[in-house]
Image 1 (tube, rainbow, N blue to C red):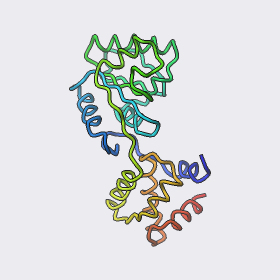
Image 2 (image 1 turned 60 degrees about the horizontal axis):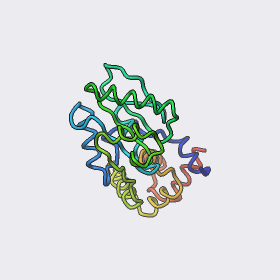
Image 3 (image 1 turned 135 degrees about the vertical axis):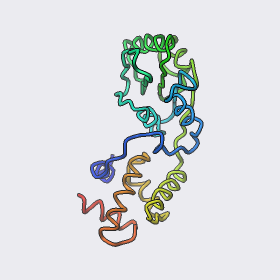
Length: 214
């Protein structure tokens, strides 16, 4: 990560992941399914896959669980929803834990959402684990294109009364962390900064913001 990107992470604090602040893009069906699962409706099992940065972890964290990547929770009959992120990184012992957990969930009324970097049948896991990950709905989480990100940022900026030019959007997408939660937090910070110095949002202003904060 270059210095500008690391500085940005030090300057801004992204909002807590939620289904409401997830930028949907081509993932409307995924969000709809997760909203149903969250209230105990719809499918009992959902598996999400996609490239790094597509939003898989955001969606799992949006369900209110802060599991560490690859961590498999123990079954608790009082727990309504279980999530396991980065299943592709599970060790042999963790795969066994997941196998046991999925069987326990299926026997009851709890819900499960898993996520990994590939569809279940393409994961390098035990066959019986891969089969169970495919028990319910399987969705690819599509990453936003740069055009979709720029549009989403412009809409968010406009909601704050801030005009986001194409030049500034391109600069942010090139020099800042590219996940939407951080980019939205950057827009919020830049809006506050622009108001404090009474200037319009331009590329030089973005640079000055980073330099002043440093």
